[in-house]
Amino acid sequence: MDSLRYIHAADLHLDTPFRGIAQTDGQLSRLLREAAFTAMERLFRFCESEKPDFLVLAGDIYNQEDHSIKAQLALRDGCVRLQRLGIHVFLAHGNHDPLSSRLAAVTWPDNVTIFGPAPEQHVFEKNGTPLAVVHGISHERNKESRNLAKLFRRDARHDCFQLGVLHCAVEGQTAGQQSYAPCSLENLRDAGLDAWALGHVHERRVLSDTPFIAYCGNSQGLHINEAGERGCFLVTVQPQSGRFVCEESFLRLGPVQWECLRLDLEGMSKIDDMEQRLGQLLQDKADEAGPGCEALVVRVLLAGYTEIDAALRQPDCLPTVAGRLAHLHESASPGIWIKDFQLQTQPVMVRDPTRNDLLGCVWQCAEEMEKNTEKLQDAVNKILASRPALLKKLTMVNEEEKKQLLHEAERLCAGLLLP
Image (cartoon, rainbow, N blue to C red; front, side, top):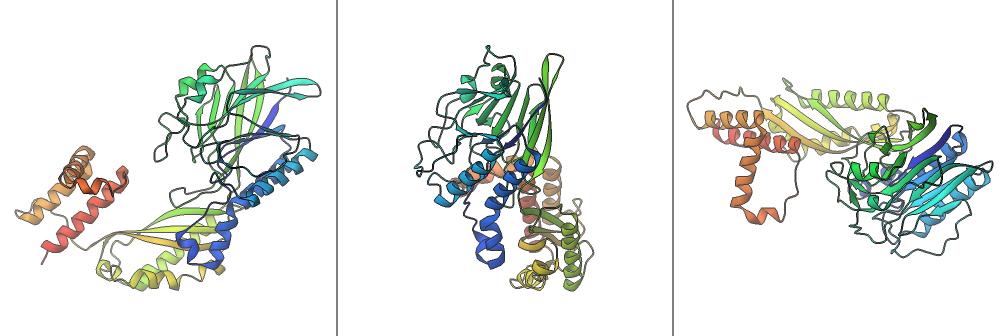
């Protein structure tokens, strides 16, 4: 068998309704509104330039069940372009765009295979010779609870490369995301396939080299917690010693990049110094952005013991600083937008857990919980147990967020107890 190449994309989420910051700035609103479509256009251009044997779309192509006519027609038009080049498209539906959703009457070209609610196998031939068997299944409903991976089996009639296409939640890989079509890594391996092209998890992850099991991540970050470059995988398959070896390379698709930047204000005593340093930090980040980045949307985390802590907490301070840096929309390349600030600064003080007073107890507790995550979690549990109504309003927080809450609690206590 000659080498085979395919592009693995997933989670395009066409027509994502970006909210929040997108409503406050017209230029950014336009960029975000078109970001998913720009990413898809880049995907088709990569297919045209790289000429893979086929394209795999592993679910959540649309962002919601009632996908827009615009999204369907744009996807259809791209597939028509690939049809002219002889590039086949294998498409599986996920939890955001299940088969039960209301689909408009779009006629798909002959090069598109859309997987149904039961496992299917399609033999991909090149010059009359089977080159691959592509297995796939779509979500039948938006809350797919079945372990779909267990339904896959290698086709014993063919000894060529065999690929599974599945939108699923692999055990241990879906922190912060709902677990639809749950399965384990062993379930995927047990199917006997040579590779899996997965969707649902929005981060790029290679879970196994043999068989090759990978999430390519989403094509465009959807919010501030999806930082960094987003795109797809170009996978090259080579036969080697009776097995198939896969090597992936990343192709950037997303035009808008979300980032969280930390600025340490330790020892800083003037707001204008902070503004200058922040401006330089943002400019440096823009300079680092790779080709294809059209906009950086940034959360700025301000930290450290500083004399300007009180000034930063004035209601008009940070909005004023953000407004004064708005020129970076136009002057930087790519343009930079500040989404928001997170304040983790503290007034200048020396933590002294040896003090023989209530403030010393506060610092001692903070220091112990900072070092021991079990003590910190125990404190959180006690607070929630005493205020059950909070459980209905609070979302789960990760370890970093717990430490941020700890620092804020320490700052508030120290502020009340210091002279």
